[in-house]
Amino acid sequence: MSLADLPHMLISESRGWQDIDRKHPSVIRMLLAVAAPLSLLPPLMYLYASTTAPGAVFPALAPALGMGEALIVGGIFFAVELAMVFMMADVIRQIAQSSDAQPTYAQSFSLAAIAPVPLWLTSLMLFVPSMTFNVLMLAIAWLGTAALIRHGVRTLLHVDDADTAHHISNRITFAGVAAWIGLMVVMSLVLSLVLGWR
Image (cartoon, rainbow, N blue to C red; front, side, top):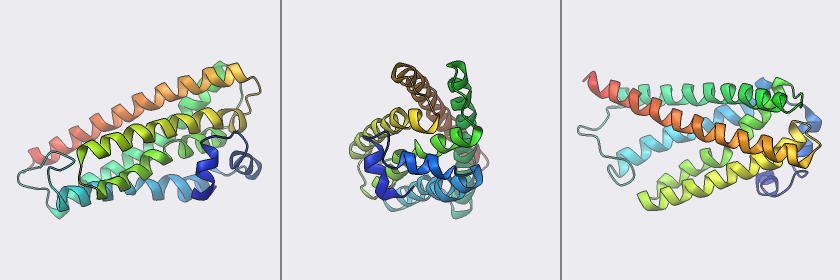
């Protein structure tokens, strides 16, 4: 998969998806090629936004995070993001199995790594110091993530029936929203702990 395939994958169940399915990428390959590099974007962009325009997108911290504190928070955020991909891969596999599909963990991991790509890329919008703009971009990214899930289920998880695929994709999307909310809660707690240690 390349980022050039992404626009087609948002609207098609074949273009891009079939290439991934045909190559049977391993968990390690998807981790190193997609999940890990893109998971670096949000912590790096948070650091950028909070240092160049404090308070414009995120609440300003007083005093601001020091470089050591920022590296700790960013490192934990990165690790939790990656852990969430592994967790979502297992959730995807369980949801699919409950509907009589039998994807492998690697197939489920591929979908779990590809689905949040719009969310990871949206962190680049933090170059624009506007909370309204970034909230709007986040909403659009969630639509993109839902579209990737909807179009990836049939091909990557090998679900033939359209109604079953629709049902599975809805459940995966709801699980993904819950996981993302959980991620935000965990990161708020981490930030509170770091601030509390001052």
